[in-house]
Length: 308
Image (cartoon, rainbow, N blue to C red; front, top):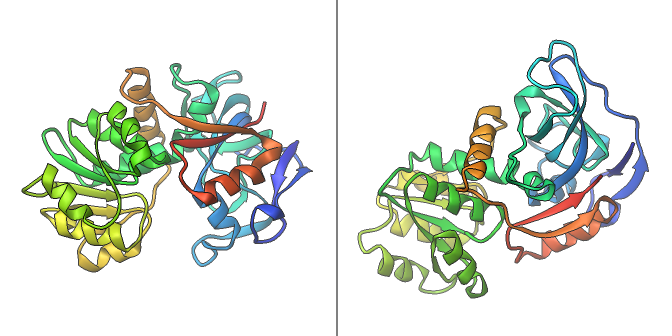
């Protein structure tokens, strides 16, 4: 199969297109013919060695954890899926080596869910990691109907899905974003506020008594400090980007693979409550270009590689 390969830690310039053996399909796994693969900042951060203290990594490495595709073959003891089924997955395995930037990827059934019929391939590939991140953070904070939640970086890949998940849970959403993304947030149902000096005051203008919960999808001193100031209960602050949140009682969270949660996200999509905004798509061979765009920031929604 054709795949994007990294032979050592490095940046976009280290990515090459190479022929690799088709993945083996272990018991409890299926082989997925990849239609599209989502691009996430964690992909290039991992490739640069940023997660080396945490995760076992083996080279040559095929990046990518997000996939949308068609079941090509099933392993032993698999009755959840059949050849031809359309699936999505957050295919984070026990070690990093055989990812989704390829024509095929093997995945355990515990990592997969049916592809939402309402999403095209690119949209479906943009849902798993970002959607699960947003969904699990909001659920673990207990966000519910009638509450007000603040989301930092609300127009990004995770944030835009977080806005929609929070709305589906019945919450009011205040979202931080650059001014050029305010109209986009209005469309999603959020009340936008601009980054920069005075952010806490702008949030208080909308929520004078403070917000019930805050999720930080960007990190940095401003997000952490403002979250601390405007959230009524500091234990209901979470960050996926900055461990400093734990210093004042908040939670530093990491997304977990979950077929159940991913299936629920698909249900929300097919119910018309969740859409995936794809900023740009690139052919598989241009993965390095997609990484440079991701590293530059200011992406609205998701970047996706189209494979077949």
